[in-house]
Length: 186
Image 1 (tube, one colour):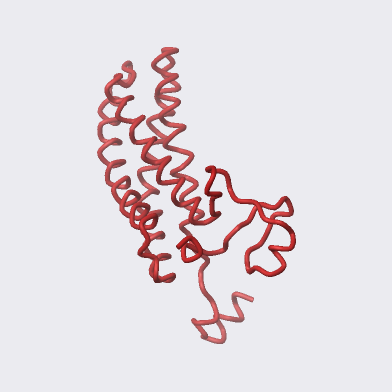
Image 2: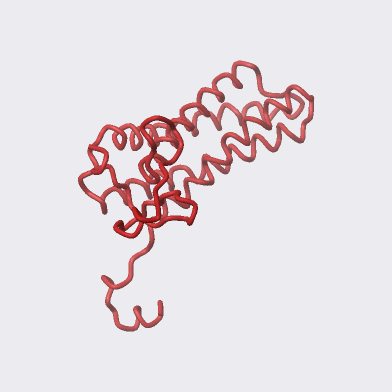
């Protein structure tokens, strides 16, 4: 099918899916895993864990600018997304891409001295970065999946709700939005 679309030359018929929801998973996994590896490496005095922490943070720092760029490009396609959740999400994500660069240079200086584990000062700063990343992820997730007003858990729907909606259900009542749908929250 892809080749047929290219052969026709119709660029409007083919469009890449949003890459932001795919790329964000790398940052969301690598940064906390790096932090946990560094903490355990320090506590257990395991060089292998602190090395793993360094490499995971480096990979996250490399991919995060692409994640942020993909988010900004996706946002341009959506339009009308000037609600407070999106404003915080986009600027916190962009800021974190820059913060990761500073953090990885700090972590690199520690990694150069192979016998040293990260200091408690570094670990406290890394914990704050992980907390900011958690807020970032929660905002993005709640805009994509929606949240119940009484809790932070995804909202559940009845099968009847899904029949009259353009949102898909996973069969367990968990609702997935194939687009960010903040207009329903207003």
